Length: 355
Image 1 (tube, helix red, strand yellow):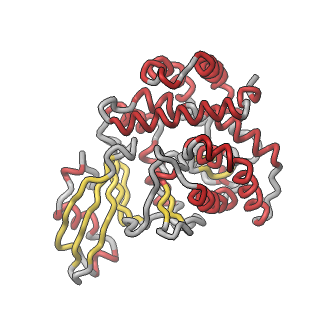
Image 2 (cartoon, one colour):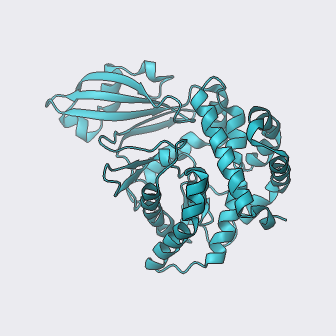
Image 3 (cartoon, one colour):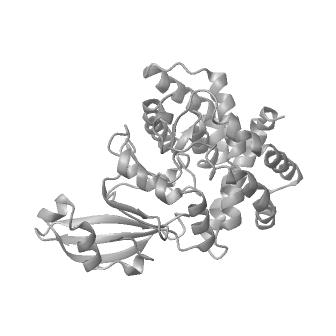
């Protein structure tokens, strides 16, 4: 019997007891009291979230993070089209325990293929924090984030495609991006005209025209695991800013090395700080690869990052066109993504990589 539900409102004590009743930890010390708090309004675009404050038979207090499918219809359809829900469940079922970076402990995960609903009950990161992407990360946070990214890249360097359920850019549902970029560009430009001058519109048109080439480019040569949404709101930091936990693996895939670093630097920090630390951040990443015995050329990283920069316009274009217009923070986030991405395209003359 499926444990998926329609919304956070359907979570109650009996449901939680039945869901966790088969888990060894909760067989020995069950839940006897529950308080449900909805959290994350305007933060996650592809889910509905709650903090489950539980009391156990022993008196122990355990906080659990509950993640369900998004309640925004357009974003829910997007998540279904791109298999986001099932990809994250598979990550926690098959990869989370072996990956060389901290991820939340999974108490229960399930994807229901009949109605495409999803439920994840995960360790709540008490005492950790995640930065506000709109405000932008600090230099220290970016440094720690890169240190956390290196083991993700190196662990599966050249071997990620041996895991047959991890997609790449050529799987049929990822090819939807080509048509979606064309179809949603007008609505993106309509919603975010204030950040899109004539030059940027021309660049976007060229990127949309070039997009059918990206799947081939992103599946050639050495591939590795990419989180693909490696942004600071998907990273929990210790108060001392010396370690991270990585969450939200819905978009994970086999991809060229450099996508995650590009996404981190081009969408998560204010433009002036990115200009200041970009070169040193790339060097930090390359040095980290080198310490693991991977010799990756600077020019190859630059090429991969510039192609990634151009392709990641899909986030503000497709996401921004489908975001709930009544959610002010969501709209602001996609505006900031667009501004930072198109600014970086200009700063690094990225268009020359597809000309």
